Length: 279
Image 1: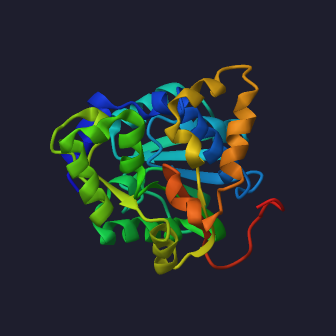
Image 2: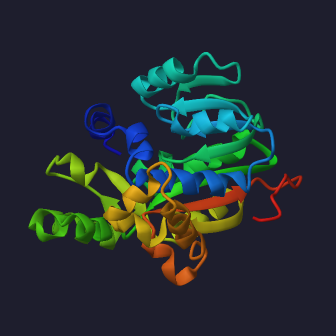
């Protein structure tokens, strides 16, 4: 993993917090919230791994949970502490998802909504899953998100990047190996990453020793239709229609490769934890 390039991308060219609060990032955020909420207990100790500047920690706190955010980038942790540090149920620290700075069986839920993106070595990804298994209580939930193997292909069509031969070369490697590398340095074309096939994400969780509950597509087709972003403006009734379009196909096996992101929800074997009847 080329950490300097990844760090530079997030420190200088890419603001994850802004991305999830604007445009079709709001679709991703809303869907992640509803997927997580149907598996989280009513009140939980949540470890938000790779939590960046706290965009997920914010709504988790509003829902009544206690949140400890861990992120690899000190700048992200500082921004999260500036925004949320006054909250009595929030703490944050710098840390690596492969070696978490928390004790065994010390949290009720682990969110991995980013760490798996940038680990191109399967051993590193397995280490992340196993650390989540270590720190969550028996019966506790692990919610992990990955970028879909086909995301750059669809994004290239939606944004017209695919007409550039340099981008087509990147996509060809993505499809063949899952390893996304951007030698051009163009920030629109992301940074070093790993793009999962739909079946890979739950397979990793299972290999780590977790029990998979479900794997779903997050956004469905809507993420690639950029004019739909305005449906998430305040008061637009189309928002619920777009969200429902994602919901109705989230478990359809033939369409899992359509979403930009995948989410796998798994639990540590042991005492059964709370699970929403709608899950």
